[in-house]
Image 1 (cartoon, one colour):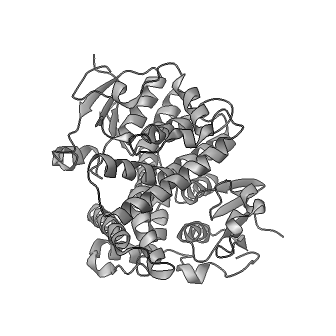
Image 2 (cartoon, helix red, strand yellow):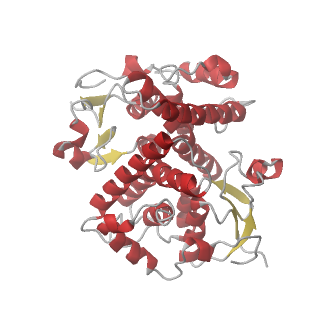
Image 3 (tube, rainbow over the protein chains, first blue to last red):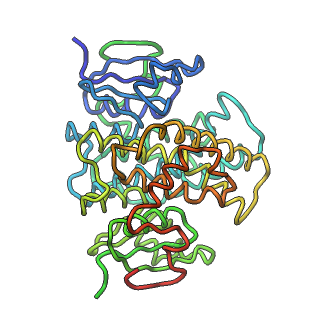
Amino acid sequence: MAAAYTLYGSFLSAPTYKVGLMLALSGLTFDYRHIDLAKGQHKSPDFLRINRYGQVPAVIHDGFTLCQANTILEYIAEQTGKFAAADTAERQRIREWLVWETDRLEPGINRSRFFERFAKPDQAVVDYHRKWAEMGLEVLNTLLDGKRFLVGERPTIADISVFGVVAHMAEAKFDIAAWPQIKVWWDRVAALPGFRLPYDLLPKGDQDAV
Amino acid sequence: MAAAYTLYGSFLSAPTYKVGLMLALSGLTFDYRHIDLAKGQHKSPDFLRINRYGQVPAVIHDGFTLCQANTILEYIAEQTGKFAAADTAERQRIREWLVWETDRLEPGINRSRFFERFAKPDQAVVDYHRKWAEMGLEVLNTLLDGKRFLVGERPTIADISVFGVVAHMAEAKFDIAAWPQIKVWWDRVAALPGFRLPYDLLPKGDQDAV
């Protein structure tokens, strides 16, 4: 039997990992379809019908197509009630973290990682992004001080979204030891039932019922 | 009598404009508090109590504090029903545009504008951001083809959010004439009742009931 969720993505993609982690921590199985970014499959007419922006990940749930990882997290939380907000105030704080992460954390870390792993641009471009990444990590480290999770006393999609980026900071050559509050929080997220690191979670090809 | 909404921001800030435009198009008056970015007021202890990230804009509505412009748009739409989604499918598409804009449009355009107006970094950094901006504008131009607005047949917060960035493209030295579908859509948004361009909308100092 096909799983209710089908995840389209790449094991190299941090946003794909976010969605995979959300499904895994929520105890949901999913079918997986590998999109080969090096071959440009994300820009193919077939994939553009699933995600008009030509980016991974995408999800199909009961015939409904979704894209943009943070909105997929919010959708799954609303469907299942897991890692969801308890009230309007929490929902607002969670959404603020999701936007902050896209705006201030992900570009610095994910592009720094891209430059380390795949293609190095001019050193000034590398330095510019490393500075943004460090500013983002500094804000995160400060705001985690004295808190168990980002919003309230239990994990929410804000933690899963931000973790999806932080999980790749070592590949971007940032040492978590420099941000001790992030390290403590990382260990708390990594202890959640169902947790898996990126390369342990996402298959390298199509797979049913991950 | 104080207005229900108080907007904290700067007339120089594209995200502040987004929120001001949402309030204006929704027919809502608001009190305005100018945050002087050059003086670092956004990093002051007083302002950090309103917005923990130390960024503009922020909004206080009936004592409830909000930050991150796109979440403020979603909140106001939910409060008023204006520029809101009609159903779950529309809500998903709107959220996808909000994330795409933060991820793929705003960094290229807003930083290119910052480099033109305030501080020029190494030319390689300028070129890198201009390329991202052009890729974003190209995607937007393509996806607007044959559509009146971004989601459905009427304007939503997706249009207001994306317009808040596009409104600053001329200052970033991008000529809208190169993206004809964006120009047609711009004229449609600019014809909405209550519409005002950035420098006609945001005061240069504190002001009650804008």
